Length: 470
Image (cartoon, rainbow, N blue to C red; front, side):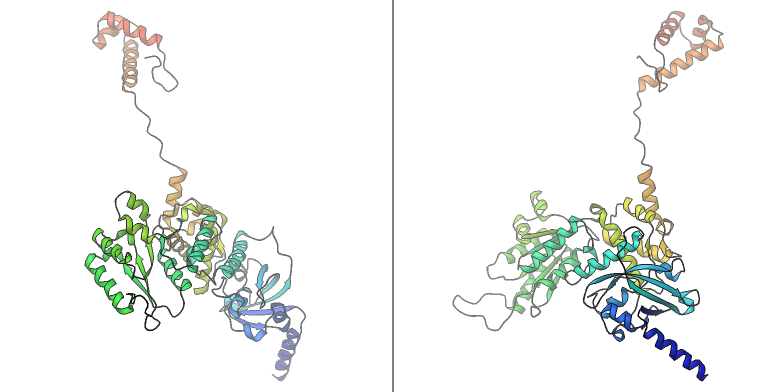
Protein backbone atom coordinates (compact mmCIF):
# COMPACT_ATOMS: atom_id res chain seq x y z
CA UNK A 1 0.00 0.00 0.00
CA UNK A 2 2.86 2.37 0.87
CA UNK A 3 4.49 1.67 -2.50
CA UNK A 4 1.20 2.43 -4.25
CA UNK A 5 0.82 5.75 -2.46
CA UNK A 6 4.41 6.68 -3.21
CA UNK A 7 3.83 5.90 -6.88
CA UNK A 8 0.72 8.09 -6.94
CA UNK A 9 2.63 10.97 -5.35
CA UNK A 10 5.44 10.57 -7.84
CA UNK A 11 3.01 10.61 -10.76
CA UNK A 12 1.26 13.68 -9.34
CA UNK A 13 4.59 15.48 -8.94
CA UNK A 14 5.64 14.48 -12.46
CA UNK A 15 2.43 15.86 -14.01
CA UNK A 16 2.50 18.98 -11.86
CA UNK A 17 6.03 19.77 -12.99
CA UNK A 18 5.43 19.00 -16.66
CA UNK A 19 6.16 21.75 -19.16
CA UNK A 20 3.02 20.82 -21.15
CA UNK A 21 -0.28 22.27 -19.98
CA UNK A 22 -2.43 19.47 -18.53
CA UNK A 23 -5.90 19.56 -17.02
CA UNK A 24 -8.62 17.07 -16.12
CA UNK A 25 -12.43 17.14 -16.11
CA UNK A 26 -14.55 14.63 -14.20
CA UNK A 27 -17.74 12.94 -15.33
CA UNK A 28 -19.85 15.78 -13.90
CA UNK A 29 -18.05 18.34 -16.11
CA UNK A 30 -16.10 19.80 -13.19
CA UNK A 31 -12.52 20.98 -13.71
CA UNK A 32 -10.69 18.88 -11.10
CA UNK A 33 -7.03 19.36 -12.05
CA UNK A 34 -4.90 22.08 -13.64
CA UNK A 35 -1.11 21.91 -13.49
CA UNK A 36 1.21 24.91 -13.21
CA UNK A 37 1.93 25.01 -16.95
CA UNK A 38 -1.81 25.11 -17.68
CA UNK A 39 -2.27 27.92 -15.16
CA UNK A 40 0.56 29.83 -16.83
CA UNK A 41 -1.01 29.37 -20.27
CA UNK A 42 -4.35 30.56 -18.94
CA UNK A 43 -2.78 33.45 -17.02
CA UNK A 44 -4.47 32.47 -13.74
CA UNK A 45 -3.73 30.69 -10.49
CA UNK A 46 -4.70 27.05 -11.14
CA UNK A 47 -6.59 26.90 -7.85
CA UNK A 48 -8.85 29.75 -9.03
CA UNK A 49 -10.43 27.64 -11.78
CA UNK A 50 -10.68 24.30 -9.96
CA UNK A 51 -14.24 23.21 -9.27
CA UNK A 52 -15.70 25.28 -12.10
CA UNK A 53 -18.21 23.62 -14.43
CA UNK A 54 -16.92 22.88 -17.93
CA UNK A 55 -20.15 22.40 -19.87
CA UNK A 56 -19.90 23.16 -23.60
CA UNK A 57 -21.38 26.64 -23.60
CA UNK A 58 -20.52 30.32 -23.81
CA UNK A 59 -20.96 31.55 -20.21
CA UNK A 60 -22.88 34.60 -19.10
CA UNK A 61 -21.07 37.56 -17.62
CA UNK A 62 -17.39 38.29 -18.02
CA UNK A 63 -15.68 35.39 -19.78
CA UNK A 64 -12.34 36.38 -18.21
CA UNK A 65 -13.71 35.32 -14.83
CA UNK A 66 -12.86 31.76 -13.60
CA UNK A 67 -16.20 30.36 -14.81
CA UNK A 68 -15.61 31.69 -18.33
CA UNK A 69 -12.01 30.48 -18.45
CA UNK A 70 -13.02 26.99 -17.32
CA UNK A 71 -15.89 26.86 -19.83
CA UNK A 72 -13.47 27.61 -22.67
CA UNK A 73 -11.53 24.44 -21.74
CA UNK A 74 -14.56 22.22 -22.31
CA UNK A 75 -14.06 19.76 -25.15
CA UNK A 76 -16.67 19.44 -27.91
CA UNK A 77 -19.29 16.86 -26.85
CA UNK A 78 -18.19 14.45 -29.58
CA UNK A 79 -15.02 13.91 -27.51
CA UNK A 80 -17.14 12.47 -24.69
CA UNK A 81 -18.74 10.09 -27.20
CA UNK A 82 -15.33 8.87 -28.37
CA UNK A 83 -15.82 10.28 -31.87
CA UNK A 84 -12.71 12.51 -31.84
CA UNK A 85 -9.59 12.69 -29.66
CA UNK A 86 -8.41 16.22 -30.41
CA UNK A 87 -9.86 19.64 -31.12
CA UNK A 88 -8.87 23.27 -31.39
CA UNK A 89 -10.25 25.26 -28.45
CA UNK A 90 -10.50 29.03 -28.29
CA UNK A 91 -9.25 29.47 -24.74
CA UNK A 92 -10.07 32.53 -22.69
CA UNK A 93 -7.12 33.86 -20.68
CA UNK A 94 -7.11 35.81 -17.43
CA UNK A 95 -6.02 38.92 -19.30
CA UNK A 96 -9.18 38.77 -21.39
CA UNK A 97 -7.35 37.70 -24.57
CA UNK A 98 -8.34 34.70 -26.69
CA UNK A 99 -5.77 32.01 -27.49
CA UNK A 100 -6.36 29.19 -30.02
CA UNK A 101 -4.99 25.95 -28.54
CA UNK A 102 -4.78 22.39 -29.80
CA UNK A 103 -6.09 20.00 -27.14
CA UNK A 104 -5.48 16.25 -27.07
CA UNK A 105 -7.95 14.24 -25.00
CA UNK A 106 -7.77 10.85 -23.30
CA UNK A 107 -11.01 9.37 -21.98
CA UNK A 108 -10.62 7.50 -18.71
CA UNK A 109 -12.19 4.10 -19.05
CA UNK A 110 -13.15 4.57 -22.69
CA UNK A 111 -16.36 6.45 -21.87
CA UNK A 112 -15.76 9.78 -20.22
CA UNK A 113 -19.05 10.01 -18.35
CA UNK A 114 -19.13 6.40 -17.21
CA UNK A 115 -15.38 6.03 -16.67
CA UNK A 116 -14.79 9.13 -14.58
CA UNK A 117 -13.79 11.89 -16.97
CA UNK A 118 -10.92 12.84 -19.24
CA UNK A 119 -7.41 14.24 -19.21
CA UNK A 120 -6.29 16.83 -21.75
CA UNK A 121 -3.02 18.39 -22.86
CA UNK A 122 -3.05 21.90 -24.25
CA UNK A 123 -0.68 23.80 -26.53
CA UNK A 124 -1.01 27.14 -28.38
CA UNK A 125 -1.59 26.85 -32.12
CA UNK A 126 -2.66 28.84 -35.15
CA UNK A 127 -6.43 29.09 -35.35
CA UNK A 128 -7.60 26.69 -38.10
CA UNK A 129 -9.89 27.67 -40.91
CA UNK A 130 -10.27 24.49 -42.93
CA UNK A 131 -10.78 21.61 -40.48
CA UNK A 132 -13.11 23.26 -37.98
CA UNK A 133 -16.73 22.14 -38.14
CA UNK A 134 -19.47 24.69 -38.65
CA UNK A 135 -20.59 24.11 -35.08
CA UNK A 136 -17.08 24.71 -33.70
CA UNK A 137 -16.83 27.94 -35.70
CA UNK A 138 -20.20 29.09 -34.37
CA UNK A 139 -19.15 28.16 -30.82
CA UNK A 140 -16.05 30.36 -31.02
CA UNK A 141 -17.97 33.18 -32.71
CA UNK A 142 -20.70 33.01 -30.07
CA UNK A 143 -18.18 33.14 -27.22
CA UNK A 144 -16.58 36.29 -28.62
CA UNK A 145 -19.92 37.95 -29.37
CA UNK A 146 -21.25 37.26 -25.90
CA UNK A 147 -18.08 38.57 -24.33
CA UNK A 148 -18.51 41.84 -26.24
CA UNK A 149 -22.30 41.98 -25.98
CA UNK A 150 -23.26 40.56 -22.61
CA UNK A 151 -21.78 43.34 -20.49
CA UNK A 152 -24.16 45.81 -22.14
CA UNK A 153 -27.09 43.91 -23.68
CA UNK A 154 -27.49 40.44 -22.12
CA UNK A 155 -30.49 39.45 -24.20
CA UNK A 156 -30.54 36.33 -26.36
CA UNK A 157 -32.98 38.06 -28.73
CA UNK A 158 -30.16 40.52 -29.56
CA UNK A 159 -27.65 37.81 -30.53
CA UNK A 160 -26.71 37.94 -34.18
CA UNK A 161 -24.43 39.41 -36.81
CA UNK A 162 -27.03 40.77 -39.23
CA UNK A 163 -27.12 44.52 -39.93
CA UNK A 164 -30.74 44.55 -38.72
CA UNK A 165 -29.97 43.32 -35.19
CA UNK A 166 -26.80 45.41 -34.98
CA UNK A 167 -28.97 48.45 -35.71
CA UNK A 168 -31.27 47.50 -32.81
CA UNK A 169 -28.29 47.26 -30.44
CA UNK A 170 -27.05 50.66 -31.61
CA UNK A 171 -30.50 52.19 -31.11
CA UNK A 172 -30.78 50.75 -27.60
CA UNK A 173 -27.36 52.20 -26.75
CA UNK A 174 -28.51 55.58 -28.08
CA UNK A 175 -31.76 55.41 -26.09
CA UNK A 176 -29.84 54.54 -22.91
CA UNK A 177 -27.84 57.76 -23.16
CA UNK A 178 -30.83 60.10 -23.31
CA UNK A 179 -33.99 60.48 -21.25
CA UNK A 180 -36.45 60.25 -24.13
CA UNK A 181 -39.72 58.42 -24.60
CA UNK A 182 -39.00 55.15 -26.38
CA UNK A 183 -41.32 52.89 -28.36
CA UNK A 184 -40.12 49.31 -28.95
CA UNK A 185 -41.93 47.71 -31.87
CA UNK A 186 -41.86 44.05 -32.84
CA UNK A 187 -43.86 40.90 -33.46
CA UNK A 188 -44.82 38.27 -30.89
CA UNK A 189 -41.78 36.40 -29.60
CA UNK A 190 -39.26 39.04 -30.67
CA UNK A 191 -38.37 40.06 -27.10
CA UNK A 192 -39.96 43.52 -26.93
CA UNK A 193 -40.66 43.47 -23.19
CA UNK A 194 -37.22 42.05 -22.35
CA UNK A 195 -35.58 44.82 -24.36
CA UNK A 196 -37.75 47.47 -22.67
CA UNK A 197 -36.87 46.30 -19.16
CA UNK A 198 -33.19 46.03 -20.01
CA UNK A 199 -33.22 49.51 -21.52
CA UNK A 200 -34.64 50.86 -18.25
CA UNK A 201 -31.89 49.19 -16.22
CA UNK A 202 -29.18 50.46 -18.54
CA UNK A 203 -30.39 54.02 -18.94
CA UNK A 204 -31.25 55.27 -15.47
CA UNK A 205 -29.21 55.61 -12.25
CA UNK A 206 -29.53 53.06 -9.47
CA UNK A 207 -31.35 55.51 -7.19
CA UNK A 208 -34.15 56.01 -9.72
CA UNK A 209 -37.57 54.91 -8.52
CA UNK A 210 -38.87 51.56 -9.83
CA UNK A 211 -40.24 50.85 -13.25
CA UNK A 212 -44.05 50.77 -13.22
CA UNK A 213 -45.42 48.21 -15.74
CA UNK A 214 -48.94 48.71 -17.11
CA UNK A 215 -50.63 46.02 -19.21
CA UNK A 216 -52.55 48.21 -21.62
CA UNK A 217 -55.08 45.65 -23.01
CA UNK A 218 -56.64 45.51 -19.52
CA UNK A 219 -56.75 49.27 -18.88
CA UNK A 220 -59.88 51.30 -19.47
CA UNK A 221 -60.09 55.08 -19.07
CA UNK A 222 -61.01 54.90 -15.36
CA UNK A 223 -58.22 52.47 -14.49
CA UNK A 224 -55.51 54.41 -16.28
CA UNK A 225 -56.68 57.66 -14.68
CA UNK A 226 -56.63 56.21 -11.16
CA UNK A 227 -53.30 54.42 -11.73
CA UNK A 228 -51.45 57.45 -13.05
CA UNK A 229 -53.06 59.70 -10.44
CA UNK A 230 -51.68 57.37 -7.77
CA UNK A 231 -48.24 57.60 -9.37
CA UNK A 232 -48.45 61.40 -9.34
CA UNK A 233 -49.38 61.42 -5.66
CA UNK A 234 -46.77 58.86 -4.60
CA UNK A 235 -43.82 60.36 -6.42
CA UNK A 236 -44.82 64.03 -6.19
CA UNK A 237 -44.61 64.71 -9.89
CA UNK A 238 -46.31 68.11 -9.78
CA UNK A 239 -43.73 70.85 -10.20
CA UNK A 240 -43.29 73.39 -7.35
CA UNK A 241 -44.13 77.04 -8.02
CA UNK A 242 -41.68 79.03 -10.12
CA UNK A 243 -38.64 80.21 -8.15
CA UNK A 244 -38.94 77.56 -5.46
CA UNK A 245 -37.02 74.33 -5.05
CA UNK A 246 -38.38 70.83 -4.76
CA UNK A 247 -38.05 69.34 -1.29
CA UNK A 248 -35.90 66.19 -1.24
CA UNK A 249 -34.37 64.32 -4.14
CA UNK A 250 -37.44 62.55 -5.49
CA UNK A 251 -36.96 61.29 -9.03
CA UNK A 252 -39.72 60.53 -11.48
CA UNK A 253 -40.43 56.86 -12.23
CA UNK A 254 -40.72 55.37 -15.71
CA UNK A 255 -43.96 53.91 -17.01
CA UNK A 256 -43.61 50.66 -18.95
CA UNK A 257 -46.64 50.63 -21.26
CA UNK A 258 -46.92 47.05 -22.50
CA UNK A 259 -48.88 46.45 -25.74
CA UNK A 260 -49.77 50.14 -25.91
CA UNK A 261 -51.27 49.69 -29.38
CA UNK A 262 -54.11 47.74 -27.71
CA UNK A 263 -55.09 50.61 -25.41
CA UNK A 264 -58.76 51.47 -25.92
CA UNK A 265 -59.69 54.87 -27.33
CA UNK A 266 -61.00 56.45 -24.10
CA UNK A 267 -57.92 55.28 -22.21
CA UNK A 268 -55.74 56.79 -24.95
CA UNK A 269 -57.39 60.15 -24.29
CA UNK A 270 -56.64 59.91 -20.56
CA UNK A 271 -53.00 58.95 -21.15
CA UNK A 272 -52.52 61.68 -23.75
CA UNK A 273 -53.92 64.19 -21.27
CA UNK A 274 -51.37 63.22 -18.59
CA UNK A 275 -48.43 63.19 -21.01
CA UNK A 276 -49.44 66.64 -22.27
CA UNK A 277 -49.21 68.24 -18.81
CA UNK A 278 -46.05 70.37 -18.42
CA UNK A 279 -45.76 69.20 -14.81
CA UNK A 280 -45.86 65.48 -15.69
CA UNK A 281 -42.18 64.47 -15.65
CA UNK A 282 -42.73 60.75 -16.06
CA UNK A 283 -40.76 59.03 -18.84
CA UNK A 284 -42.26 56.18 -20.82
CA UNK A 285 -41.00 53.02 -22.48
CA UNK A 286 -43.75 51.40 -24.52
CA UNK A 287 -44.03 48.18 -26.50
CA UNK A 288 -46.22 47.64 -29.55
CA UNK A 289 -46.77 45.17 -32.36
CA UNK A 290 -47.79 47.80 -34.88
CA UNK A 291 -46.49 51.26 -35.69
CA UNK A 292 -48.49 53.83 -33.73
CA UNK A 293 -47.84 56.44 -36.43
CA UNK A 294 -49.33 54.15 -39.09
CA UNK A 295 -52.28 53.32 -36.83
CA UNK A 296 -52.89 57.04 -36.33
CA UNK A 297 -52.72 57.64 -40.09
CA UNK A 298 -55.44 55.00 -40.49
CA UNK A 299 -57.51 56.71 -37.76
CA UNK A 300 -57.10 53.72 -35.46
CA UNK A 301 -55.12 55.57 -32.78
CA UNK A 302 -54.93 59.05 -31.32
CA UNK A 303 -52.39 61.04 -33.29
CA UNK A 304 -51.18 63.18 -30.36
CA UNK A 305 -50.52 60.08 -28.22
CA UNK A 306 -48.85 58.25 -31.11
CA UNK A 307 -46.35 61.07 -31.59
CA UNK A 308 -45.86 61.59 -27.84
CA UNK A 309 -44.85 57.94 -27.32
CA UNK A 310 -42.74 57.68 -30.50
CA UNK A 311 -39.86 60.07 -29.80
CA UNK A 312 -37.46 57.20 -30.50
CA UNK A 313 -38.80 54.09 -32.22
CA UNK A 314 -36.78 50.87 -32.02
CA UNK A 315 -38.07 48.17 -34.34
CA UNK A 316 -36.97 44.63 -33.53
CA UNK A 317 -37.02 42.77 -36.87
CA UNK A 318 -38.75 39.39 -37.18
CA UNK A 319 -36.44 36.40 -37.26
CA UNK A 320 -37.50 35.62 -40.84
CA UNK A 321 -36.05 38.99 -41.88
CA UNK A 322 -32.58 38.10 -40.53
CA UNK A 323 -31.96 34.48 -41.56
CA UNK A 324 -28.20 34.90 -41.24
CA UNK A 325 -28.69 35.03 -37.44
CA UNK A 326 -30.45 31.65 -37.21
CA UNK A 327 -27.24 29.50 -37.04
CA UNK A 328 -25.68 31.63 -34.27
CA UNK A 329 -28.92 31.82 -32.29
CA UNK A 330 -29.38 28.06 -32.69
CA UNK A 331 -25.89 27.42 -31.33
CA UNK A 332 -26.68 29.75 -28.43
CA UNK A 333 -29.77 27.72 -27.51
CA UNK A 334 -27.82 24.46 -27.82
CA UNK A 335 -25.21 25.77 -25.40
CA UNK A 336 -27.88 27.17 -23.08
CA UNK A 337 -29.27 23.62 -22.92
CA UNK A 338 -25.75 22.26 -22.26
CA UNK A 339 -25.25 24.62 -19.31
CA UNK A 340 -28.34 23.17 -17.59
CA UNK A 341 -28.27 19.50 -18.64
CA UNK A 342 -26.16 16.49 -17.78
CA UNK A 343 -25.88 15.51 -21.46
CA UNK A 344 -23.98 17.68 -23.93
CA UNK A 345 -24.71 18.44 -27.59
CA UNK A 346 -22.14 19.87 -30.02
CA UNK A 347 -24.56 21.68 -32.29
CA UNK A 348 -26.71 21.21 -35.37
CA UNK A 349 -25.76 19.28 -38.48
CA UNK A 350 -25.47 21.42 -41.66
CA UNK A 351 -28.60 19.73 -43.04
CA UNK A 352 -30.44 20.66 -39.85
CA UNK A 353 -29.43 24.30 -40.22
CA UNK A 354 -30.63 24.14 -43.83
CA UNK A 355 -34.02 22.93 -42.61
CA UNK A 356 -34.25 25.77 -40.09
CA UNK A 357 -33.34 28.29 -42.78
CA UNK A 358 -36.46 27.36 -44.78
CA UNK A 359 -38.87 27.78 -41.87
CA UNK A 360 -40.75 31.14 -41.64
CA UNK A 361 -40.60 31.47 -37.79
CA UNK A 362 -44.02 33.04 -37.13
CA UNK A 363 -43.27 33.16 -33.39
CA UNK A 364 -39.72 34.46 -33.89
CA UNK A 365 -36.86 33.85 -31.44
CA UNK A 366 -39.10 32.24 -28.82
CA UNK A 367 -40.12 29.58 -31.33
CA UNK A 368 -36.51 28.92 -32.38
CA UNK A 369 -35.58 28.39 -28.72
CA UNK A 370 -38.38 25.84 -28.36
CA UNK A 371 -37.41 24.01 -31.56
CA UNK A 372 -33.72 23.75 -30.63
CA UNK A 373 -34.56 22.61 -27.09
CA UNK A 374 -36.74 19.87 -28.60
CA UNK A 375 -33.85 18.85 -30.84
CA UNK A 376 -31.43 18.68 -27.90
CA UNK A 377 -33.75 16.39 -25.97
CA UNK A 378 -34.37 14.18 -29.01
CA UNK A 379 -30.71 13.91 -30.08
CA UNK A 380 -29.09 10.58 -29.26
CA UNK A 381 -25.51 11.56 -30.06
CA UNK A 382 -23.39 14.69 -30.36
CA UNK A 383 -25.44 16.35 -33.09
CA UNK A 384 -28.99 17.45 -33.77
CA UNK A 385 -30.05 15.85 -37.04
CA UNK A 386 -33.07 16.88 -39.15
CA UNK A 387 -35.04 13.90 -37.78
CA UNK A 388 -34.67 15.33 -34.27
CA UNK A 389 -36.59 18.50 -35.13
CA UNK A 390 -40.33 18.86 -34.43
CA UNK A 391 -42.68 17.58 -37.13
CA UNK A 392 -43.88 21.09 -37.96
CA UNK A 393 -40.43 21.97 -39.36
CA UNK A 394 -40.50 19.00 -41.71
CA UNK A 395 -44.07 19.70 -42.78
CA UNK A 396 -43.33 23.37 -43.43
CA UNK A 397 -40.25 22.48 -45.49
CA UNK A 398 -42.20 19.95 -47.54
CA UNK A 399 -44.72 22.68 -48.29
CA UNK A 400 -41.92 24.97 -49.47
CA UNK A 401 -40.32 22.22 -51.56
CA UNK A 402 -43.62 21.18 -53.16
CA UNK A 403 -45.80 24.27 -53.51
CA UNK A 404 -49.34 23.72 -54.78
CA UNK A 405 -49.71 24.04 -58.51
CA UNK A 406 -51.64 26.94 -59.87
CA UNK A 407 -55.09 25.92 -61.02
CA UNK A 408 -55.18 25.76 -64.82
CA UNK A 409 -57.96 27.84 -66.32
CA UNK A 410 -60.68 25.73 -67.94
CA UNK A 411 -61.86 27.07 -71.32
CA UNK A 412 -65.38 25.70 -71.50
CA UNK A 413 -65.82 26.03 -75.26
CA UNK A 414 -62.60 24.16 -75.94
CA UNK A 415 -63.52 21.35 -73.54
CA UNK A 416 -66.99 20.95 -75.04
CA UNK A 417 -65.50 21.00 -78.53
CA UNK A 418 -63.08 18.22 -77.60
CA UNK A 419 -65.93 16.12 -76.17
CA UNK A 420 -67.94 16.67 -79.36
CA UNK A 421 -64.98 15.67 -81.53
CA UNK A 422 -64.51 12.46 -79.53
CA UNK A 423 -68.19 11.57 -79.99
CA UNK A 424 -67.88 12.07 -83.78
CA UNK A 425 -64.79 9.84 -83.89
CA UNK A 426 -66.53 7.07 -81.93
CA UNK A 427 -69.66 7.29 -84.08
CA UNK A 428 -67.61 6.96 -87.28
CA UNK A 429 -65.70 4.04 -85.81
CA UNK A 430 -68.93 2.27 -84.89
CA UNK A 431 -70.46 3.05 -88.35
CA UNK A 432 -67.26 1.74 -90.00
CA UNK A 433 -66.69 5.08 -91.73
CA UNK A 434 -70.24 5.51 -93.00
CA UNK A 435 -70.99 9.20 -92.33
CA UNK A 436 -74.72 8.86 -92.94
CA UNK A 437 -74.97 6.08 -90.37
CA UNK A 438 -72.72 8.01 -87.97
CA UNK A 439 -74.98 11.06 -88.29
CA UNK A 440 -77.96 8.83 -87.48
CA UNK A 441 -76.19 7.47 -84.36
CA UNK A 442 -75.60 11.03 -83.13
CA UNK A 443 -79.14 12.19 -83.95
CA UNK A 444 -77.89 14.73 -86.47
CA UNK A 445 -78.79 15.46 -90.05
CA UNK A 446 -76.27 14.30 -92.63
CA UNK A 447 -75.54 17.91 -93.70
CA UNK A 448 -74.86 19.08 -90.14
CA UNK A 449 -72.63 16.07 -89.50
CA UNK A 450 -70.58 16.86 -92.63
CA UNK A 451 -70.16 20.52 -91.68
CA UNK A 452 -68.87 19.69 -88.18
CA UNK A 453 -66.61 16.90 -89.39
CA UNK A 454 -65.02 19.16 -91.98
CA UNK A 455 -64.37 21.69 -89.17
CA UNK A 456 -62.66 19.04 -87.04
CA UNK A 457 -60.46 17.96 -89.95
CA UNK A 458 -59.34 21.58 -90.49
CA UNK A 459 -58.71 22.08 -86.74
CA UNK A 460 -56.33 19.42 -85.36
CA UNK A 461 -55.68 19.07 -81.62
CA UNK A 462 -52.92 21.20 -80.08
CA UNK A 463 -50.15 19.87 -77.83
CA UNK A 464 -52.39 19.97 -74.77
CA UNK A 465 -54.99 17.66 -76.26
CA UNK A 466 -57.39 20.52 -76.91
CA UNK A 467 -58.74 21.48 -80.33
CA UNK A 468 -56.46 24.12 -81.81
CA UNK A 469 -58.32 26.64 -83.98
CA UNK A 470 -61.66 27.47 -82.56
